[in-house]
Length: 313
Ligand code: NAD
Ligand code: UDP
Image (cartoon, rainbow, N blue to C red; front, side, top):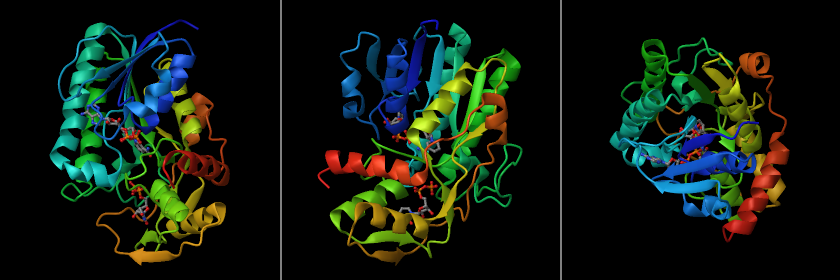
């Protein structure tokens, strides 16, 4: 395979660090760019000794000039707790970040992939969600800074493609979990595992009947790299695991796998929390020959082992 110069924005975060690892091991020259808002140098410290890996502290709301062949644009806080912490900054990261990265891609003729999200479907009325569904999104709610920011980013990607011929890839990522999730980022899988390992109550929001479909990180990264390297295919394409679980089922499974004495408690459901979510992955199967291989139980076991070893649980 040709050795490429690859920029990964948000490379010190959960998904970004796994992506950098894979690209470094594939012998590419990788620049990991991050402002460390939710990411951490520890996530990539095992890559520091590689000569084909470089770390750059930068905020993508400001322009950057680099000579690269491919850009993976992952920079953006992904957990509701973190993206709501500074909602205006979240929109700036999605919108100004997209403009800066698309401008760079245009200038250096790089191919650029956007880490979009199932959140662009909002609280979906169509189930499961195919790419052709335009979504059901509140423009002024507490999740809007993330949802609408990501929607505008998709618009920018397709406009740069139509107007400037930028070689884009748009990937709609559904809930993904695995080692290196931030232990305090508030997402459901990390929350439940940390609570179970500490013997604390498991906090189910609402009645626990809302659903999500959880994809293990290795499967997700494989789909991402396939999409980036597929010729003449721009997306948007859903990448996620179609196995759908209620949040209560997830809580029970985590308690079982951790052998925990924790009990489930019920807390208020945050506003605009989507009731159901499941990707239709027909397009990914057909265009990328991709589908997830890791079942929830297996992925949770690996993630639990990581939190046991790394987070004083
Ligand atoms: P994460 O929070 O672990 O990673 C995001 C990274 O971006 C962090 O390292 C953070 O410090 C960095 N960052 C944030 N703002 C930045 C800025 N202005 N400039 C430079 N760096 C910045 O989250 P993640 O789960 O790894 O998500 C990565 C991407 O995938 C995000 O764009 C997210 O929206 C998308 N995504 C993730 C999921 C999921 O389930 N993990 C689902 C849908 C979409
Ligand atoms: N959730 C929960 N308890 C928690 C954290 C989250 O019940 O401690 C619920 C949350 O309300 C949502 C689902 O789990 O219905 C997934 O939440 P997460 O923040 O992981 O992702 P998103 O809502 O963005 O899909």
